[in-house]
Image 1 (tube, rainbow, N blue to C red):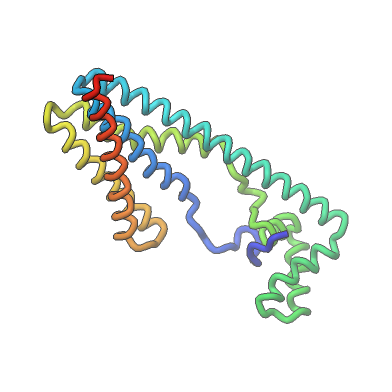
Image 2: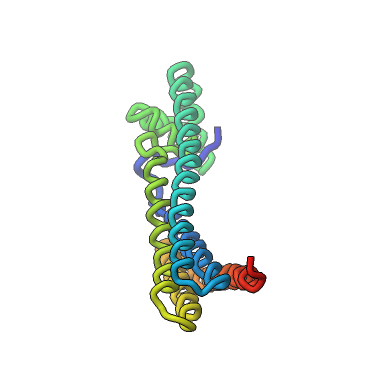
Length: 233
């Protein structure tokens, strides 16, 4: 089994659990911008832009929710399978499991005798939780939640897509495209700054990556939309 960490469940280093949600916000903003900007390049009809934007919003949100639910369900199934195996091993070969647990602190410099005592005491406290956390990196009380992932996918995509959609449908005439581009890039910059702050990472690289990536995506999509509109397809 892979050895993830030594500390028992509930005593691991605190790590932020919202990384997937933060990434969904970034993805939602870019995809939402693509929906609105791309159609605006093909047509100037406010109704057509709104229709296509709403269709893209709902389709993208549902697709993201479905993908998140399926992927996290697979993760949960794998976690349950590994926990079932660990539970059988603890029941059938408890001595070998204690020895396996003892090797983890021993490999970090603890004396063999002391490592064995630590492993025995932790196992006596909550065998499955301790072994699952130390050997698998899984907390049996906090398994992956597919329903939470699906809900986060829907909300993050919808929230990200609403901004460019409102900008491109509410702003009149020639100002529509530049205002939408500025709104989306500002949102991407803010998203990069917030995600960097939550992850305790440097802000500038995150902001630059978000803004450049979003600008490239919008430019390519707008160019394709303009070509299609010029061709009358």
